[in-house]
Image 1 (tube, helix red, strand yellow):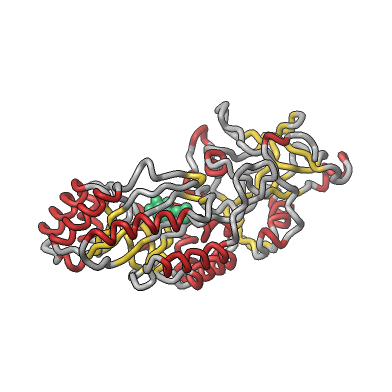
Image 2 (cartoon, protein in one colour):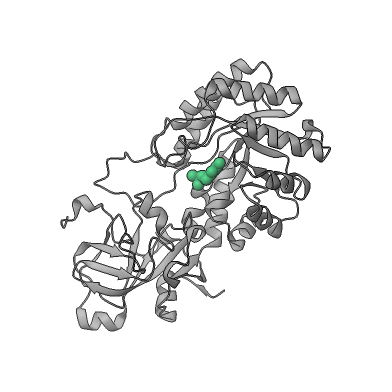
Length: 407
Ligand SMILES: *Cc1c(COP(=O)(O)O)cnc(C)c1O
């Protein structure tokens, strides 16, 4: 992989017409180690966030030893980079053949359920393979309420009373039993974990045995651009959120229970930026060579404001003059699909033109993993960049569509 100090150097040297992912392994290691040093339990990286081999390998180098996996493809991806990493199979709804593969071939011994029929499937496989249920930790996933860019409480999780029944049934069969939740991705409200802990506590007080673990899931917010027009309050830093979580865990007396977290976004978001090229400028609209069907679907559905930095083509500057006012541009994606328009504008110099580049920061999470081949576009070029995104020239600025006027 070619190495550059900054994305600007990469763009001006390669003059790429295709999108280029700028990977920052040292940032990834620092963010993974930072999370592990703050969280008082086991950190299991959520593979779906970004399951690229170079990411998983770098995380193993950083000392990550546990991974949250959801499918045979993810089991394989983790095994390919580590013979002995622990895998936690935390998808509540699973094919029976996948459960068998997990237990038999990959030695997985931690699994999540949120329905009695999932327990039936699991126990069928456990009996057929003659595994002692006492070697398996089953986490009962409980429903949570919260506010996040991606809400998952409507899709997964058992109501509290049902969770108690499921936990008791698992306990009677001889499994080790824990409680887990996942509050959704990119939470908006620092009280989210405390509300979930209160539900977990309600369940714990009724099951009649000691829990083998509490898994607080993911959802930890990554840093993106702050949108001045957004009604969503700005989140505290990860450090502040973690001290709050540690205090809540102590207050609810979960600090004696073995803890697990499944962070994804917060670990990998900063590790990548993306160089895109302006294929065409049409008034205040920029057509770029990536979009919602490639690297940018997460920012589109989650209405996330990504930081963007202008990379001027020197040839165009001699024609258009230097960067002047920073103004909002509507950004259209590469495909012929009419919905392929970003939900947030990029604020960029008024002189930006066809042929210039833009570096989009903090796109490591839910970007590469959500790429499609729609319309024949599939970005797949990688370079390594050594300087963190934040340390280059300041990003141009961000805002929402509601404030399309010049500031
Ligand atoms: C997606 C997912 C995660 C990771 O969520 P982030 O918001 O990226 O931290 C963790 N646990 C489960 C069960 C998930 O589905």
